Image (cartoon, rainbow, N blue to C red; front, side, top):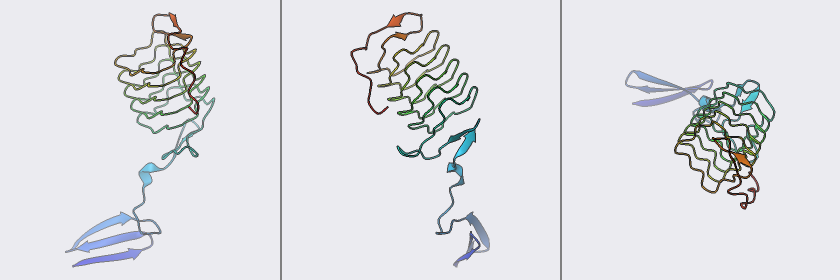
Length: 180
């Protein structure tokens, strides 16, 4: 009743006159084309980042880029221009964004857990429902930023300019997190 025929990287399963066609790799498993690395404004976004292999685009111009729902785990975006970028729902866990420009960026529902955000320009950025737990925001500028329902527990706010232009040193006693 069931018949499996393999030819040139394709598998055909015949079931009572109905055929199912699927692309398969050399080992017979289905190919995962949706998880391939992709390039955005000259930056290669690594599809399945690891501590050793992750997105590395320091200093690049990614202004206005749509990076929504991307896995940017441990990404090095230090000094990058991400002004107006869309980071909604993205995973920026342990990402290095130090010195980056995120003015007018949209990062609602994003995870910035343990992200390095020191010396970052976050003016007019939106961080509603974001997780910024244990992030280093020392010397960051958050003036006019929108940050409703943001998890800031244990975040480092040292010489940080907050939404109303006030400089806060409320958590300078927390040392910078090693290995961000």
